Length: 400
Image 1 (cartoon, rainbow, N blue to C red):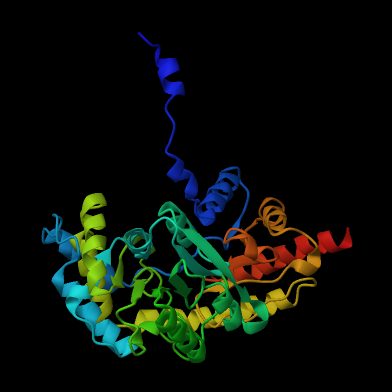
Image 2 (tube, rainbow, N blue to C red):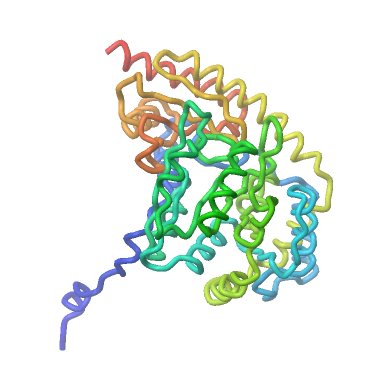
């Protein structure tokens, strides 16, 4: 009989798991919390979530739904009442009428992105994406056995594509263009002309588009353009959004997608086979978010604009750093190249010596080298203190 030790040495995780990368924000959060447990004061700029509470009316709706017994299994595609209101939301914000049958509700936007990519891509397919970008896209494409092809976002274009570069990365194997506007980590927003050019490219090359619009309500000038609203794009676009950012509902885990009708059943099958359904009481809270008062969200954006301006001004006053003004989301993406220090090294110094938790740009791919990501969805007091600490660490670097 074989010993347990010998049997255990033959057990290995699957190779496909190696294709997945962890979300670096949670890795840095764990390190920061370990420092705090030892009595070290840390200003948190690493986690990308609103620092505001979920509005009271939404919390109340969730609690009432639990008390009413809405705690059982429900439709894997999402309850009809919420999907119907999402239809209205898409019409209000994108000017597009879509049938309720094309709406899917999931436990956050991230699983819907993952499931859509798994249902769409085969081995040998290629997906182009804006780089740097939220790591789940590269993980999902690689997990599907396809190839993720980065197209750089240019700082001189306010972190937008150079369209000739995008076209140059399209090959006969390309099946999917991934968009994210407003963008994480840079805060860049595609212009109307950008979106139109991508739409033309998708039509000409017969490509699908996955448009991550989780920050759709988080903009500081004009509303961002949505590609799904353009002529002929609604049947070749996967629109993903959710409630985490707009309504400060990150922990509730609630997202939605609008998909072409032929993709709905495969994605719902993946939901059914993995998570069964999204809790109904959470969906009822989402319904209240869409139909209830919107004042809390509007107030949050007014506060975020002030905090954005405070953060960007402060970063641009630190010698060796420069930062574009983000037009959406709640991230600053300062250029640190003049400091001559790698992004990961500076992020480590800021955490361990300065007590400021940030993310290196490389957490979003190698194209992020030379940058940091800082979330300014925190108090103005925290932003001012973080800027003081960053300046102190940077001054030691430049004077040494």
